[in-house]
Length: 502
Image (cartoon, rainbow, N blue to C red; front, side, top):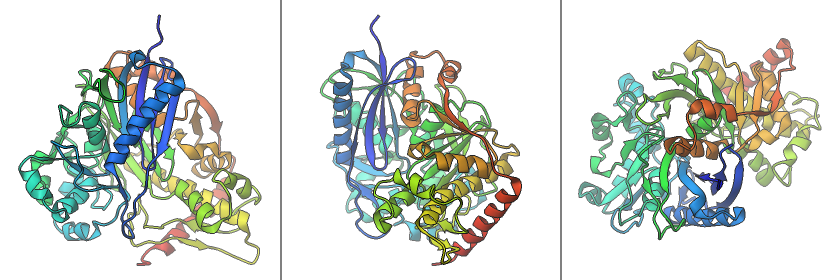
């Protein structure tokens, strides 16, 4: 019998990848390309949507070539994407009205400040999100208010809005000819425009942000048995393949880690950190600075929800140490440098380069390094930088425990930084919780693959997917409680000192 595969398109903040997975969840081929980061002004971050689509075409072709697999062997395709990033385009031509406004972009701070007085607890509970430049609604409002002709085009039904999943799904299924204009519930839950309970666009929020409803995509399940649509013969695959799964990147990682039961928790260590915990079929309103979000929805089954905490700077701090300080020549070198010190030497590094995300939500905070003495050296700085990621993760875990009344039994870790054993061990130490790294590290793409495979019957259900999950490494806490208490207390004092800088 001929081997069949599921394709996973993973469009991230810095690169686009296409991976092919077999029935055992093993990678059979992949290709990855970076795209340009555009910084028009301080605090503004943009991508060229047409470059994202071009990179998508190229990585699909490259992955098929590298694996020596023909498109006829692909059963279905799933999509995962950077969330909140906002794109508007013309339905007839496919031309964007403006560059994509990336999730990191902070140009809408004044809009957020103006709306803060109009948004109360009921709106927060409805969306699960705080007022922040992070989410799509204020980015879309900014585009409507500042791009010539866009608002009138939106009111006439000529313009389309979407997060990156919508943009790529539209092109994959035909673009201007007959592309589907859809998004899945996980991405919709990150816009500030969807009601978590009804899983529908909310009329009151659309009026609040002054957004024409005709702009919006249709909200669909993450696992879509009927498929959102099919690829086209003139597209990158050269044939019709069902596109049947879509998840925002962090929800995809939760899905790929097989966190299908309430309480199961994962953390993705990338440019930032994103920690999600499955809370079951009822949204849990956070009282401790976390986000309530949709984890996934399988076909017509009730949605599953999650609590999420985001760390803005994790791997990005290692890059900063490499590029701005020149302490290392490549990112992996930081583990060796940090290992040159037995501890942090009293140094704390709070990487609040553009404020602090969960659970603090302090946009005015700024980064600091504190505790320097004559004996501080490069290794102490490197170690403190790695420890900052673990401390921020601890802060989110504690907030989750306070919100749910349930401790995190095991933290499933994925992302590029999990290759760093020193970081993973310190994470287990400071949490006093085991940390497990899966055998298949590409959990974000795997989650999109699983979604498309479930939709098309490639896998029978989530129980089968759970049997695929195996740990590659497990880290147990080796730190005594007194040391843990001292380190955490020092970190908390440093965080407070970073507040109110602006």
